[in-house]
Structures are given as C-alpha cells and as structure tokens.
Length: 95
Image 1 (tube, rainbow, N blue to C red):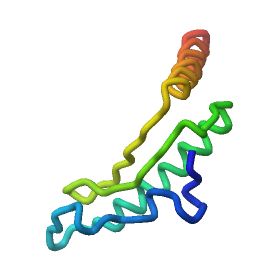
Image 2 (cartoon, helix red, strand yellow; image 1 turned 30 degrees about the vertical axis):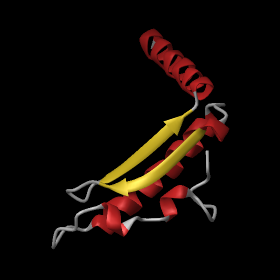
Image 3 (tube, rainbow, N blue to C red; image 1 turned 135 degrees about the vertical axis):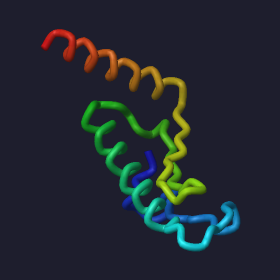
Image 4 (cartoon, rainbow, N blue to C red; image 1 turned 90 degrees about the vertical axis):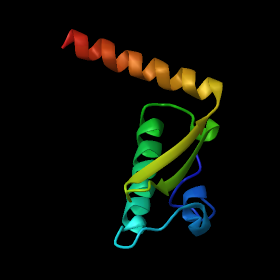
C-alpha cells in the first residue's frame, strides 16, 4: 500500500475541483479523518501479514464532509484479506 505518511501518497492531493463545496461544511476535517483511517488500515494489514503492494488508497470527503477512503485492491490482495477475515471470524466463534 502506498504509505500515507510518505510523500506522493494519493490521498495527499485533495482535488478541490472534484467536489461541490457547501458553506459551513468542514471537508478538510473529513479528508484528514480518511487519511488517518487509510494509514490505520495500512498498518493493520501489514500486522496481519497482508502484502500491501496490491493496495491503493485515496482519502476523500463526502458531500456531507465525512471522510471517505477509496480503495483499489488487486485480486491476490483481496484473497489475502478474505483469508485474514475468515481466521478472525473462526477465532471469534471459538471464543
């Protein structure tokens, strides 16, 4: 995954022309939240043993100002994430 803390991470470029601005809505706060969430997900995937080279994440803000993370995952990465989620689900059932 592109590291959100590194220069050039896709979420660093907030596209001001791609959204409709509404007076009083704090889009930047939502975008920052999404950027932080993407970094948290990258860390969690790495800790779970998922190779993040097949992941791209872009922080954005929704029309209401809430944070949104757009992700693209390669097919092998999706399979790795699915395997981790199945392991977690099995562990939860057992406990």
